[in-house]
Length: 184
Ligand SMILES: [Fe+2]
Image 1 (cartoon, rainbow, N blue to C red):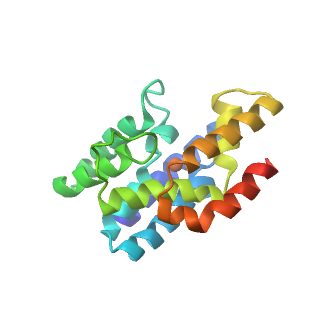
Image 2 (cartoon, rainbow, N blue to C red):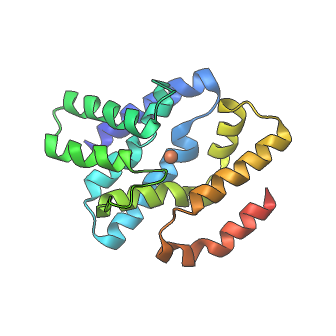
Image 3 (cartoon, rainbow, N blue to C red):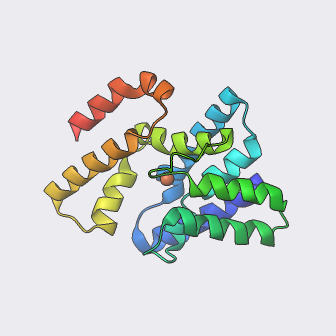
């Protein structure tokens, strides 16, 4: 199933690139998936759930559907439709949906993340240290900002995203975050 999901997402990314000039798989999701794989092994999470969720976490962005709604919510619904159509286990689909739903943004304090949700969420943040272009693309393409606005927007996006990184992981990334932040 992981290979099928990856092919599905890469095809969507290629179509998105033909239209918008940016490849989500090559520049962002590929890294999130690799990092999520490493984190899943570190914390003994369900690798299949983590990888499928990591691959699909931004599927709403590449499909450009319901763009005025949360891409976490829309993405979890798109993932559900696709995985159901492929005959994937409904209980596993529920786990994938939650990983996508909680992959970014502020979380209600009552929400306790599963190991799999934790991996996808933190991998999405850590991916900024492998390829930061996603933020420039969002600032230029989605928010249509000029050069100075773009720099400030990217700084703010990475700062607010980095705040959500797990405290234990921050020990490893704090220094490099400061360097990147100052370099923009
Ligand atoms: Fe992402």
